[in-house]
Amino acid sequence: MHKVEAQRQFDQDGFVIVQSVLSYAECDGLLSKLTSRASKRNHAGIRNLMSNSAVAAIASDERLVGIVKNISGRQSIAYKATLFKKSGKANWLVAWHQDTALPIEKFSDQNGWSSASVKDGVVFAHAPRMALTQIVALRIQLDASTSRNGPLRVIPGSHQKRLTDEADFEVWTKKSSVDCLVGKGGVIAMSPLLLHASSKCISDEPRRVLHIEYAPSFDIDDGVRLAVA
Image (cartoon, rainbow, N blue to C red; front, side, top):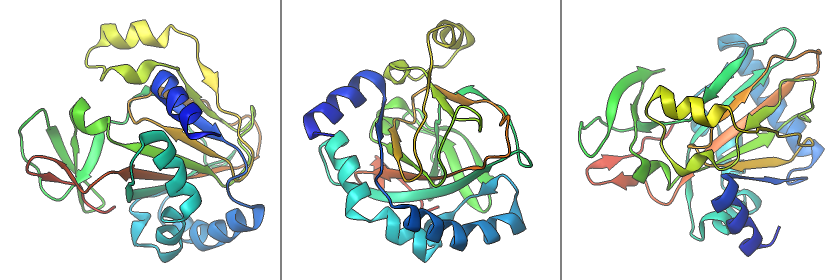
C-alpha cells in the first residue's frame, strides 16, 4: 500500500490491513519458537515477549518498521510484544474495548495517567489520549484469520476519541463493525484507541497472533518512560 494511502486510511478508520507481509515459513518458524513456551504458561498466550530474540528480530524487520513509518510518518521502536493464541481448546470472547494501558518504568499520577497495576512483573498504567495517539500496534497473523476462528472485529473511526464513559461506548458499539479477515503472514496495523473485539472460535482452526506495539520514543510523556515488555 502506498504511503499516502496508508496514512489516509489509518487516520480515517484507525486501522490498515496489509496482506502477505511475512512468508508461511517465517510464520511457522516464529510459532515453533513461541507456542511451546506459551503452552507452559497460559493456553491463551504469553506477555513480555520483547526479551525473546526471535520476536525482537522480527519487530525490527524493515517490512514491519516500514508499515509503521508509512502510517505515522516517522521512525518508531518496538517496546511491547504479546502472543495471542485462540483455538477451539483455548477459546474466549473479547468484548468491545480500547487498549489504554501502557507498560511504564515507573508510575507518576500526572497529565492524565491513572490506575497503575502490575502484570507479570511490569507496571502498566492507563494513558491519556496524547500518549495513545503516538502508538501503532501491528498484529501479525501467524495463522489465517477467518470467519470461523474468532477474527478481530473493529469499528472504523472509533479511534478518534478516548472513550471514558458508558454513554460513549454505547453510541460507538451500535455502529457498523468490520471483521478483519487476513491471510497467514498478513498484518493488521491499528491504533490502540480503535474499538475492537472478537467472538469465540466456531471451529478448531487456530488463530495465533503476534501483537507488537511501536512508539516514536520510549519517553512517551513528560516524566513517563515506556518499559520494554
